[in-house]
Length: 340
Image 1 (cartoon, rainbow, N blue to C red):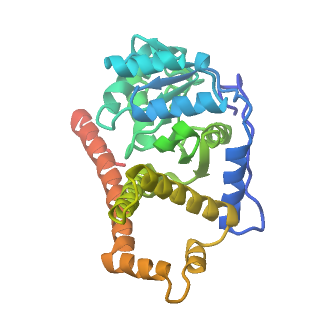
Image 2 (spheres, rainbow, N blue to C red):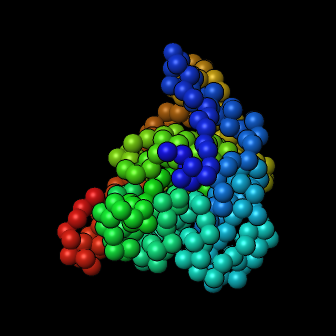
């Protein structure tokens, strides 16, 4: 089965490099996705339900990469005037309701908060056809929850085999991050039970148009949230702290911020393009008795590494909590007692 029930075809891109180490595979994918402009993807109309920061970042990244043109995107109208104006300036048509977006879209991006998603799924269920692919970026919400919610809202429960309108929806779960706006995202994609390998390939291709993307089992998405979903905030704090240190030592603020940000970007590029372990790269910078090893020792004493590990774990645990809360709310509303 192909994306769009046969109306659209998707091809696999950036296959794994057999016989190479995992770091080297990542380096190859990172270079290909960042340096080679991708051709437009045959996804049809891509509709966004939710017009917030993540949806806008994805839309801008898709448009600027050439993967999806603004004329092929739709978005549900935002009540925030400034936000609505940004979508208009991007060239994306705003529709009156979530249902309208689902009705005209081949790929529907569910970019709303987890607690809002159940109501949205009920609203759009009657517009989700077998040709519709649902792409969820809602943290903590499983593909099985979305499949069940849409089927239940349509009254079909996914059991009316004689009527394709009631087939369980095709869902791909995506965990992007906001740097997709500048085509530097780190994303993961996971397949739902009723999506095809072509569906997964197409969405992985779409996300690789705006950065690096890995395919993971859905059980690992909470971990992805902790590492890359929330990760930009950690790095912003690191850049801010490095710049503060520079200011403390006499640098002008603008110069300190530029040097800190460029250093983070350069170090990340070294990891991706060299294929070497971060520890090996760190050791190359640390001369015996030198300035860098003194700084590394100070960071260890301050618990920087332990703090970062704790941050990733806290974010992952919160993602899991959000998923449980969504399931519990559904179970309470329906009396089903279903869990993730």
